[in-house]
Image 1 (cartoon, rainbow, N blue to C red):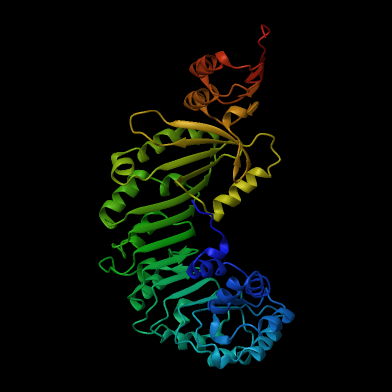
Image 2: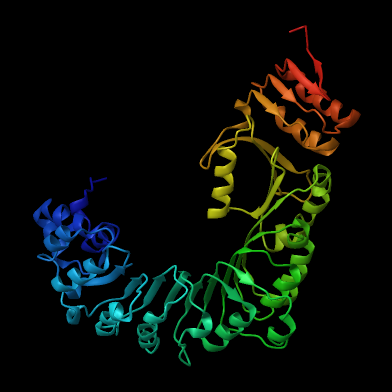
Length: 467
């Protein structure tokens, strides 16, 4: 096969590569490589300017190469030092010639006059706006938001990093938005959004708030539903199954649902049978269900109910009909349960694993249950966590310390199945786990081929002197 180099690629692919490069690097470095790349850069017209990343000196240099109409995205966060830089930018690039803007990211503007330039931007091609502001008072941006709401090209709005009140935003009727993400949302506000946004397809909120005291007065009618929404994401929620049923009954056309929740009672929210019933009756079109539920065990013996609880996710509905594979992690020593669909990657999960990595305990372990079959027993593995993307293979573990985890006879059986493949194991501590006579037998059978020389049961040390 003939050798292919960067400069032989078609211009469309080169421009896709440039989409991921800094505007300064493109014009100061890439365009100087050769005549062909010089030509490709001169034809490139999808520049993003992030003023946080560009000094005044660099802005001045690249202004010699780029015409304003080739800029399609602006990031104007207006941090404490940035207002002067924003003014400097517009001294170099004529605001009236920024005719191809498709995306803009705004920060906080403390004074109305600081945001006056927004009214002079050409927004006929604007597709998305992202507002990042820690202030509860964002009224200075409302005139600009009101202006773009009337544009038929406007499709995406990102408010996940701002404190906008849904009721204050000047929603047009009808509004063309198809994608909306916000920081928090109440049930009443959610109902309002579904009323005002007839083309909304994807909605994401960092937190869903249910006012228990005024729920009956503020909740929409149970007979009401909206057919436009296809994808819903709720993060960092602490909702009950009753709350979820009320929320999801509003949008029976959902095809994708993603939930992240932390509850004081895991079994009330992660009940596989309840979710099966809810999806069958409220979400008949659901194709993709992703969730991550976390719970810290209050008592050690709560882990004994885990097997019965997990069986609810090993039914025909979960494994055959929907093909949704559920995994449960029991973080030993910390007594934390994670239950989630796989694959999963959330910031919350990453933070939890980072906390395990930094723990002062010498042996942080995860007992992992994977449900891949309805006929076989659970498959479980124990992992020593080194980092998010660096999980040691079980067969390399030398010491296991699971004292005071209440794993019982069943947990000991899962452990025994795992350690049969750990040929490097030399130490095992299982004090105060109520493993019983059968548990001892499971371990005895599993350790026939191992080199374990120290085992602790109820603080009784057993040493195999034959070794």
